[in-house]
Image (cartoon, rainbow, N blue to C red; front, top):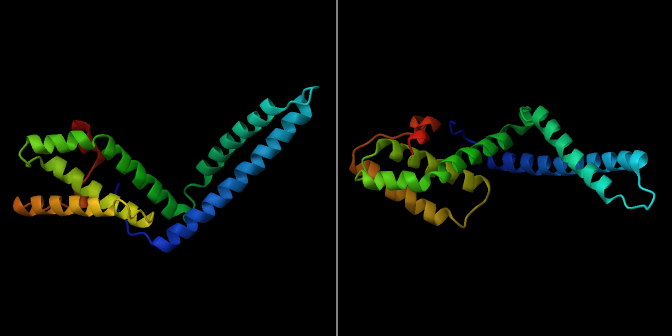
Length: 171
């Protein structure tokens, strides 16, 4: 996944609107399905919990179908980019221990590990900035500085464009 410049204000505005619309659509679908199920299958004792629960489940499924249909709409470009960015970061995070271990075991010469870490730190910084996550920014900045000094010490030229998710397969 290639990193892109995203307008933070536009992203937050579109994310908030998408969240509100998704919530409203879920409520609408759950109520409609629940009422239809109650209308046709209501129990004589008046306990319709299972039908209402089925309405919510059908509402979630319907929301996922609608979301899958509109996810490529231009209004959601920033939201989907950050969604994909978080998924890419999560793939790396799950192997981060192995990547750091491989780098340490190679006396800091494993170019693939350095490339992955460079991408991960840069992508994480962008993600944290877009989501206003300031709690972990300090440690991330320290990790970036440490990696940058390693890259400089080894006279390497590493770019985020060098990253490819196939690099993770070896870890």
